[in-house]
Length: 358
View 1 (tube, rainbow, N blue to C red):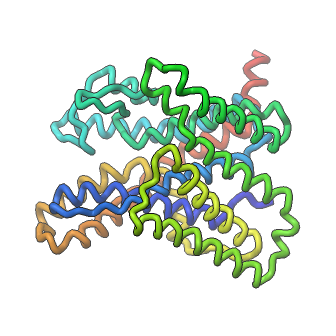
View 2 (cartoon, rainbow, N blue to C red):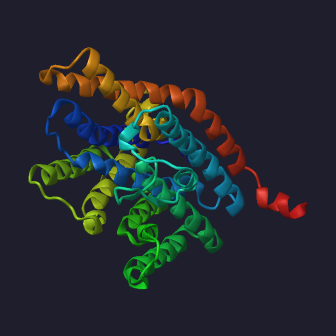
View 3 (cartoon, helix red, strand yellow):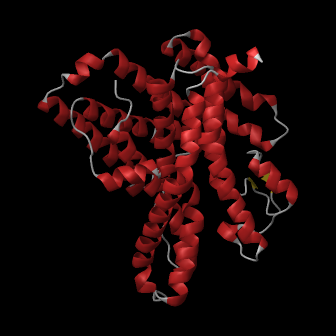
């Protein structure tokens, strides 16, 4: 089975661009006194969570021991996050205020590097790199996912995680946590990882039937994909803001439908093959981490020296997104790929066995 899914890579590209557009809006509003407020770009996070769950159960489950898997995931995620965080620290220390960062001390820095949120003077509980909140969920999912490898069955793993997340979500709020960050693990959004796992296990169990889907079936799947995307747009147009606790049942389910449809289309013969889109997909993690600082700098430079006219903010949005995409591709090619190689090397080794033999 080929674990490289081009449609998923393309979807990663689209999701990262959606998140980038969601974040560029307040920057543009601040620079040009506009009122951009399209919120559904944030659904890119939900899509990423579903994809993470899908990939884990589609290509990683049962193929590495716990120790090797977690070390591999560490090198895949953490070093690049550290780099992006330390870049924000550097800009702050030389006199800038990157991405609204107005306070910094040693305690905040080391805690942020360890994914521990701190309380800032303005009252918010956050990391230095705010969007690192999603990585807290990712890492937590990877840890509990790796522990379910003892079941030797993806279906049992999913069931165990379902009950575990359910216990956290339904009983966690009654434990009166002393640290605000603990509340993160009571968020129903964690179920989005399981959506991806369900998609992966269903596809593996019905692989033969999927490959035999004909043209009519592909058209129907494409129609479901279009309806899912349309539903996201309609929710935005109607101004139906989804409360965080219900996000998993709106954006989460629609994100799962989009992922599932694209995987079905690829396995039945329809795939996205545009090289540039796939390259952005490969660089989507770099784009996700670095787009705020790149876009903020681009907007300030463009607004000050070239595009100060309020009628030109659309061009500024476009150019700042292009700058973020191209810069992220360079980061991917020359930095991120190095950590990817390390991650893959660890994932292929039986590290625990070697450690026990020493």
